[in-house]
Length: 334
View 1 (cartoon, helix red, strand yellow):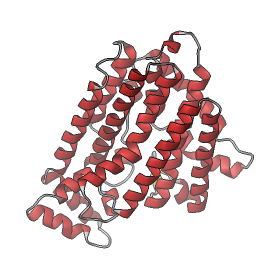
View 2 (cartoon, one colour; view 1 turned 120 degrees about the vertical axis):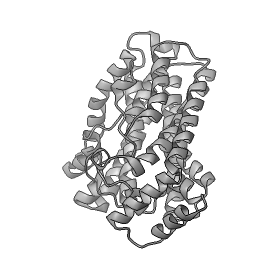
View 3 (cartoon, one colour; view 1 turned 180 degrees about the horizontal axis):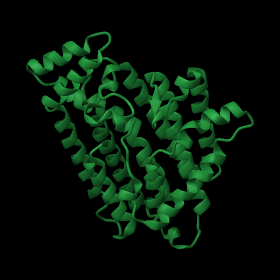
C-alpha cells in the first residue's frame, strides 16, 4: 500500500492533468466483461480511484517528446498505454492482497475479503489480460518493456514471500525487491511516455532513471507509514505489515541494530500472533531505534537521485511537476 499522494499538490502541468481526467473512461471500458461478476470484481479497485501516479508520470514524460507539441498527436495511444500500466498495477494489487490476506485496500474491503481468493485472483488475471490487449494495440517496444517489468514484479513478489517472517532479511535483498515490485512500473511509465512522444534516447533513458529512483524513494517512504501513520489515514492499524511478516525498510534497519531495543523487537516478532499492544510496542521500538529516521534518510537520498537525472531535460511545467513529486514523496506527513 502506497501512502496518499494528492495529485494537486505536485501536478501543475495542465495537459497532463487533462489526460489524467480522461483516463477514467478508458479504464472503465477496459474492465468491462460479458460476465457481470467479473466486471464488478475487476472494477472494484479501478472505481476506488487510487493515486494514478504511474499514468501521471507517463503523461508528463510524453511532454518531453517532439510529438507532444502537435495538438492531439498520440493522445489515444497515451491514454491506452497509461490505462494498461495502471491495470498492471491493479492486477498486482489483487494478487498482493490474496498473498498478504489483506482485508482493506483504498479505504474499502478487498475483493478477497468480500468474495474470496478465487474471485480476487481471477479479477487480477483479467486486469492483466486487458492491459496486455491495450499494449498490443499500440507499440511493440512498450509491450516488450512492460513484459520485462511484469517479470520483475513477479520475481519481487516471490522474493518477498520467501522472506516473510525472516528476521535475518538482508537490506540488499530488500532493495532488490523494492526495485522489482515498485520501481519497475515507475520506470516503465516514464520510458513509455517519452518513447511514445518521440523523445530522443537520452531523454528516454534520463526519465527512466528518474522513474526508477523515484519508485525506490516511494517505497522507502511508504514503508515508514506502516509504523507511524495514524490508523484513520492507513485504513488499518499501524504495524499490520510487520504483523503479517512483511518487514519494510524501517523494520530491517531496526533489526540490524544491536542493543536491548533490537533484542526486544526480535522477541516480539518471533511470536505467532502479535496483540494490539505488542504491535504498538513494536512500532515504538522501530522508531526509537532509528528505523524510521533511517528509512526516511534513504528515501530522501533516492528522491535527490531522481531529481539529478532530470538535469539535462528542458525546463518547464513537466519538469517542475516531476521535481515537485520527488520532493513531495519524502516530505508528506502521511
